[in-house]
Amino acid sequence: MRAPDAELSARGERQAERLAERLAQLPLTGIVSSHLRRAVQTAAAISRRTGIAPEVDEELEEVRISPEARRHRYTVSPAAILEPNPDDYTTAALAMVRLAPRTRWRGGGGVEGIEELRRRGLRAVERVIARHHAGVVACVSHGGTINAVLGAWAGVERDMWFVPWHTGVSAVLVNGEHRALLTINDASHLAPDQDMLHIVAGDIRGTGR
Image 1 (cartoon, rainbow, N blue to C red):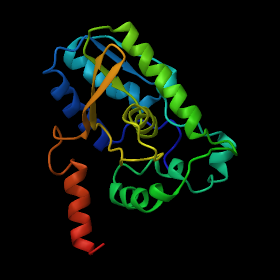
Image 2 (image 1 turned 90 degrees about the horizontal axis):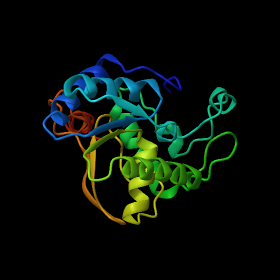
Image 3 (image 1 turned 120 degrees about the vertical axis):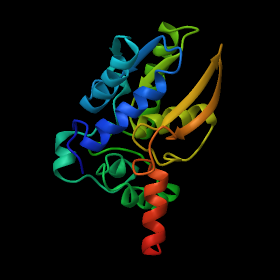
Image 4 (image 1 turned 45 degrees about the horizontal axis):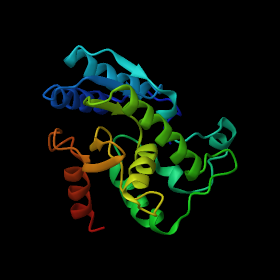
């Protein structure tokens, strides 16, 4: 497992720059990220390309796991695969496919439960929406939080319903109280050697998994 507040890897830095290039083509009006370093660094890359100063909302952070729970390698659950090795997405993707459909993420033992994560993530995103009314905002968060928020809006009952690639773009159109999901986890801005669809498809084909 990665460190709880890891910096971007070299791959992550390249992905963040490609993401920034893509988002710079949009009429962005705001950038908001969690306080975790990898999110702050990603937001900084977008800021450099757009000239927009990033904001921080701590409730956009990933699932909260206590230091004690981390030391004891918390019980296997969807929470356990939220921080994959950036160079080993195939293992994380296959673990998600096997584990997520049959596991309820109740939390406990120092691991934040899915219900609290969902409430926290929704609070944070709704604050972003309120502050940037009628704007186009890049909101930099993390896989578990994004799963929880988008799942709540889409009415998905599964706790973890898609594999969250780093720098994937999920776009939401907000109209009053309505939320329309435009894209989920799109990584078309990444080159084939960085795009996780190509990486995982190639690995699975090569190994016969």
